[in-house]
Amino acid sequence: MTDSFIEAPTPEEVVTLAQAKFPGRITVRKTAVRRVSLTCDRDIIHPLCKYIHDVLNFEQASSVCGVDWVDHMQVVYHLSNYFNGVMIEINVDVPNDDPHIDSVALIWEGADWHERETYELFGIIFDGHPKLERLLTPQNYEFFPFRKSYKLRGQE
Amino acid sequence: MAEMWLTMGPQHPFSHGLWTLKVLADGEIVKDAVPVIGYLHRGWEKECENRPYPLIIPMADRLCYSASMTWSHVYCKVVEEALEIELTDRTKYLRVVADEICRIQSHLMWLAAMGTDLGNLTVFLWALREREFFLDLNVKLCGQRLTTNYPRIGGVRNDMPYYFERDCLRVVKRFEKAIWNIIAMMDESAIVVSRLKGVGVISRKDAANYGLTGPTMRGCGVDFDVRRDDPYCNYDQLDWEVAVCKEGDAYGRYRVRIEEMLQSCEIIKQAMEKLDKLPKTDPTRVKVPKNVPAGTHFARLEDPRGESLMYLISDGSDRPYRLKVRSPIFVNVSASKHLVDGVRIADIPAIMGTIDMCLGETDR
Image (tube, each protein chain N blue to C red):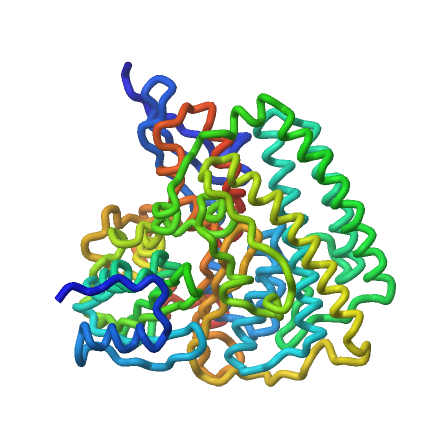
């Protein structure tokens, strides 16, 4: 079955189509006007993003960011559609002892630097990224400053 | 001819801040470019995790000195979404006026910088002169020229003074005439036009894929504006148009910004009319609790430079657990490799000038 291209999917269509494409792998956290929040498994993030980009026409990755939940890491994607202003938020949990996730930088080139930033600040490794190097901090840093284990003054 | 790496920056007349563009040049032609940023990285997001919510507003101002109003606005907006606060109409229109003043003065700053980049010093002086009037409006509204510290969580710091509407409309009226002098100065200068036209062309599809936003993206033909397509603060109740230019070259991006300034004037006038009809006694600020309930929220709005987005994770305490800033210029500058690909070295300032660099928000 080939997926037919949809120029401006509504939040409901996004949820139905994504769940039909990846049955049982996506949890919907909430939907609102022009907003969809999903949680998905780590191993389907690349095919899911490719589907969202190619079929659901989300042309831009607004941001990719990391979160340190102490017991695990999380990568949060914000994807936006230019035809109706819908934004998808995807949360993916990444375990602390194996912080790897597939890169989406080849789908959206705009995600390239966001992933580099997330790598240098949280130590999450994006597999398949074209150039995963430190961007904002000096190359010789050996720690990841945005992890909760890195304390600021007044936080100790 | 042998290829050679040229380092433009961190101190270079075209860079408008501390960043470096490493350019692989084959004679005059650019083969590859690598932007290097990070000179101003100060851990802004981490620093916020250590501060109570209201104390982050002045920090948000300092993300970008010429777009301080929109940055503190987007921060207040995300906290309001977490607190589920609905603003009063008066507050919304006050924020619209403040944001559009900010947009005009930011674009004028860009125009001034663009003028010097292209060797047109008169434009620099004229644009900065017009900008002063809008900065004076900032002073009248919130007591500061640049780091305005005006939006508050749940409203704005103060209502406008009684003379503000008169002064604001006067400045706008004056500006709508004065900008045509500047436009003429740019468009009738053969040097400026020939340096802008046809350089740095980006197609619509690529602009979306590279993550370009704001005037840079609309100059490439993407018809999207957060103010219209994902409306906030009653922008949908005002009658204005999104400036889009299909050419995709530096000149198109220049024209989009000029048109945006004129549209902002229109928005200010209409918002002032709306404010006039609202009762003067409406509150401009509501009381908000100190602690924000646990949850994740994001808010985005149209910054002068593009789409700014903040993603907030609150854990029920009086400090954010994580606050992520999506800076428009951070993404726009990452596309500079494609913007300058195949052009001559002398065209780089003209092309990079049209993305309106601001390093405070890029490096955070």
